[in-house]
Length: 161
Image 1 (cartoon, rainbow, N blue to C red):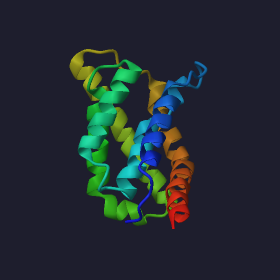
Image 2: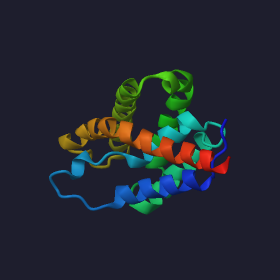
Image 3: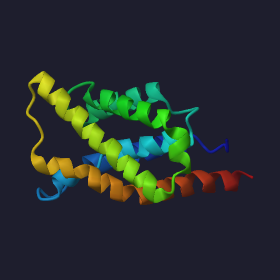
């Protein structure tokens, strides 16, 4: 495992939180990707020693507080995503980027199903139909997110040598 400065992990998650807060036009608002899930998936694949289920839970609780939703909703969604990514990490790591994107799209769709189930179980209003297209946006954004985070992580390691 190549060492990298730990701040890269935390800054990337803060940037993901901030991207989730950016105001979007009403027409494209439902297409907002689950930024935290994308960034967390990257770190789960690339650094499983530092990022795991507990880390995903804490990040989810922070996201719940920042976004003002149901306390624990994003935490449970991220823990489920983290569990699946950890389970298939060895395979995901060696998939080509296009296959990783498709897999992340399926994981983000699963996240929407979990979210809809939680809202249904708690009697909260369900998401309108356009929100089901957000996993496609996340799938399309996975390659640039992966490449940017990989360049930051590996570039920082190279500068330390």
